[in-house]
Length: 91
View 1: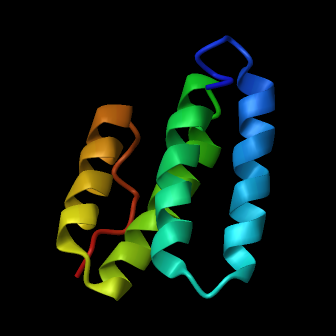
View 2 (view 1 turned 180 degrees about the horizontal axis):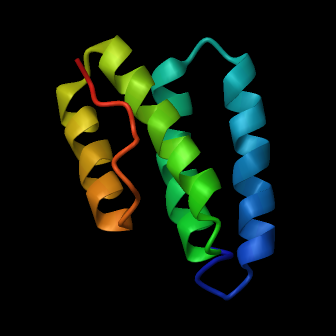
View 3 (view 1 turned 90 degrees about the vertical axis):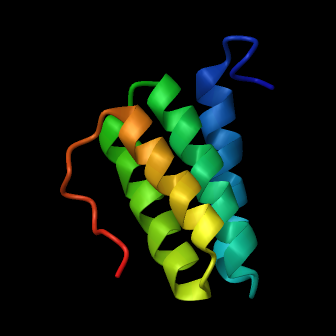
């Protein structure tokens, strides 16, 4: 919501705090979903390397959890972002 109002820095701060909280919890699926949101926010702020790192981490978690629909969604985000192909592909 902050990003929609043009407050990208505040939005990045909020999502980074959410990532820190999720990282400590035993909820890997929710953590990966938060990483996907972070990707979108960091891309809007033109922080491409941070965005791609968040996507890559989300992809690895979704693969490990056996969540093919979320793997597919993450790969679509990767393609839409225009990032390079150095991202690790799922097995």
